[in-house]
Amino acid sequence: MGKILVTGGAGYIGSHTAVELLDAGKEIVIIDNFSNSKPDVLENIKKITNKDFKFYEIDYSDREKLEKVFEENEIESVLNFAGYKAVGESVKKPIEYYTNNISGCLVLLDTMRKYGCKKFIFSSSATVYGDPEIVPLTEECKIGGVTNPYGATKLFIEQILCDLYDSDNTWDICILRYFNPVGAHESGLIGEEPQGIPNNLMPYIVRVASGQLEKLSVFGDDYDTHDGTGVRDYIHVVDLAKGHVKALEKLDKEKEGIFIYNLGTGVGYSVLDMVKAFEIATEKEVPYVITERREGDIATCYSDASKAKRELGWIAEKSLEDMCKDSWRYIERQLK
Ligand code: UD1
Image (cartoon, rainbow, N blue to C red; front, side, top):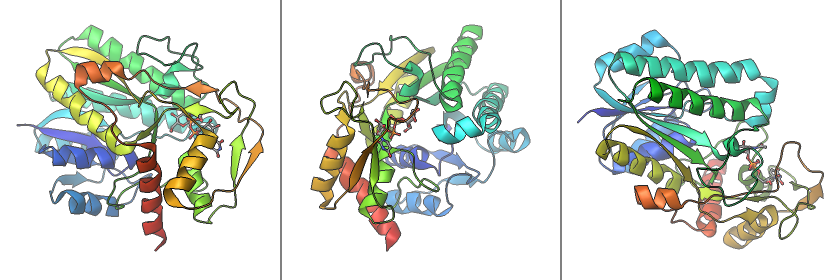
């Protein structure tokens, strides 16, 4: 059995997926340059799973070093988590985002091709749907209309992967469109660690609950939603990680092809729903104030996740309470 290369395996989604792959008995190799993660994550993955893996501290766009990884290991498939993901930062640093996310991914794909490894799972995002015309979003919905360089990198790489498959249909490619990943591993050992002041809702809520930040700004309460605040499809990161294992199993079973799946719960919650759920689950207070809308935000976005259920046998199992409790547990441990 060949090995699975996990790029960005020390990051938030990469580390949770590494755990699920190891738990499923797969052999993995992780590469990471720790640009947005810390080395102790690797030890914690080992602690959780009681399994070992090879690790290389390299940048995935460093062709020479990447080739060495392929030389030294029989890599059969690749899961790519080595992308920058902060929307606001991408607006300020478009060159860095396009270089890391797109050029890096091209180096990776080119190296895979050189070594005859053609199984690839790509972390895309619901952001590729832009401002949805209808919800729930199915994989057939129109894509485009992204509002920032981060979103553009996801859209462009999807296109690159479709072109790559058209040029050589011996590739096996799976594009996973994540909705809003939140939560952490229930051990509290790995989780999300945004640098600086968080942009995303859940990391912000936990910092308010812990007293590190004073109050949450709720960006607008005049959207056309049940309480006026933005509605999203929050998905527990462990469910998301399990979706990757299922996707990989599909690629292993299927003949070649390119497949696209939404990974979401199919349920939308508003900002205020999230605040309430968090307060109930953790018995912590989350003071908030209603402010202006955030530029580029949309009212409602949630998935139709039935294709993944039908074709991968995957379904998100964790509850909103789990998402809140697990996010909190991780931060509590960090504060100790
Ligand atoms: C954002 C990105 C999306 C990316 C995703 C990664 C934008 C426009 N979109 O999605 O491209 O894939 O993160 O997880 O940035 N909110 C507040 N107060 C806050 C933070 C958020 O009210 O301090 C609200 C937002 O207005 C939104 C909801 O919470 O209604 C979720 O926001 P967020 O967690 O940033 O995710 P998205 O905007 O959905």
